[in-house]
Image 1 (cartoon, rainbow, N blue to C red):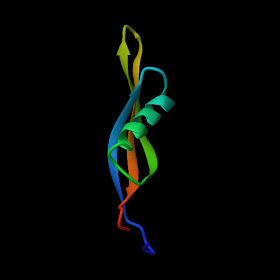
Image 2 (cartoon, rainbow, N blue to C red; image 1 turned 90 degrees about the vertical axis):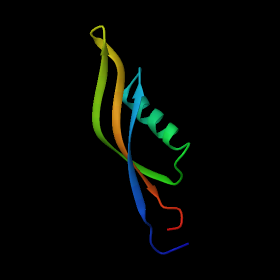
Image 3 (cartoon, rainbow, N blue to C red; image 1 turned 135 degrees about the vertical axis):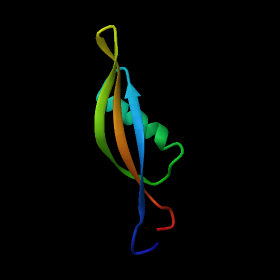
Image 4 (cartoon, one colour; image 1 turned 180 degrees about the vertical axis):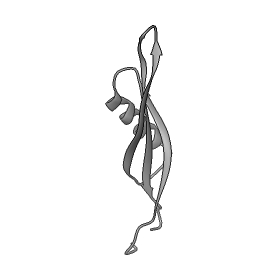
Amino acid sequence: MSDHHVYKKVEIVGSSRTSIEEAINNGLEECSKSIKNIEWFEVIETRGHVEGGKVGHYQVVMKVGFRIQSS
């Protein structure tokens, strides 16, 4: 193991019909299927989709940080 780490960030959007927290968890769960070594996330935008005057989906834009494997 090296004595330093290198990280990369990607931007994703998680969504949920139920809550902002579930939108975060849904986004992280799907992201972790293809990206390894995820270590943090930053919520940078919260928004929603409106259906019939009510919230149809909560949408959360996140930056997800992960460690480059060899670092």
